[in-house]
Image 1 (cartoon, rainbow, N blue to C red):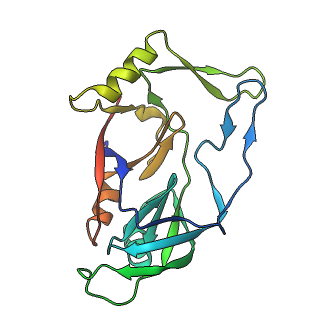
Image 2: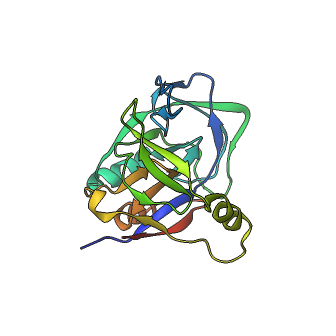
Image 3: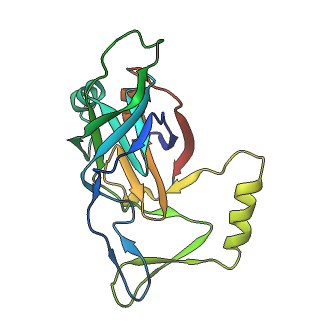
Length: 209
């Protein structure tokens, strides 16, 4: 049975990545110009908190973080193909916990390491080809790709659903498509989030093809 899937467009942003964050080295092909990994990975992470809204899932630049409580829920529910790394938490001088939270201490937070990052999706903007040098995928703008991109940004109608190729998926509960920088989550992942407090959760539509 195919699970319902969504794009995780946004969650609470209570700060930003700090200067002690170290991104793993990326390699760039001289021929196609694509740098990999496309979605960055980190060897160490500092999150610099301005405040804590009480959300058990927060975001940084192309990165997600969950509280120790949400991590435990995800492990209990056996959310697949995800790892966790404890992060260094730094609080700004003016840091405060939202008074509506009702507690005085913030939980520990963990970086969500999404293990699968190359599930296929159908793009109406790019054609997928293979680079002759690095032998990896590269993306070239379709003839009408720019027009579609402009219409997608400016249109007031409901955003089109992201089409995920089901045969390229292997049961992951959170994953990326290489040509789409927003994580895709299953109903199981979403149900874990909803067991605890969360803020500013925005989901997009995704379907299997």
